[in-house]
Length: 201
Image 1 (cartoon, rainbow, N blue to C red):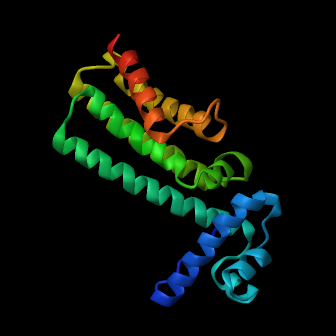
Image 2 (spheres, rainbow, N blue to C red):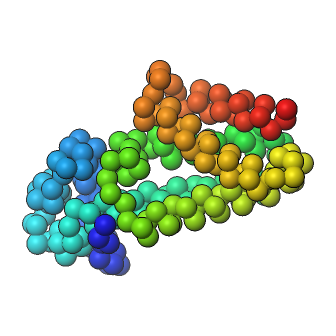
Image 3 (cartoon, rainbow, N blue to C red):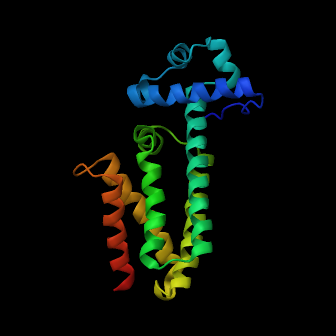
């Protein structure tokens, strides 16, 4: 997958770049990977194809830029949650709820884009590596809290990794291929109760 060119720094150019990404996200959601073209994105964004190519080399670079933005936004939310947990150090149920809630939020925010990025479109090795690193960092932080709360037994690092990947897979299943319609609040409640029982039995 091709990378986008360096994101512009000037305000006006940055606004154009963000508008291109917003429009691209909508078109990818509506038309899928195969149905999206740079010409269609440029037209919908109200710019020439030449201007689009000034920022983005091709369709794959558009998708890469969207993936980077999605990952950056999710990472910022996760870091904020863990900073709060370190400061407040709540009990197990509230700690689980905070972590699960932010993972749910990452999936329900732009769900069609999330589906495209994780299921339908090609991903570069670099992007896959960054996603694995993000999961590993989250698992490390979860392991710290499991130790703080004295749960997870002697294999806390493994339990933490399974919790992170398990919750992501469960949320993925519930939101992108739903068994039944479910609100983010209900999904968070169900998963919090599920993992609380798993860690305390």
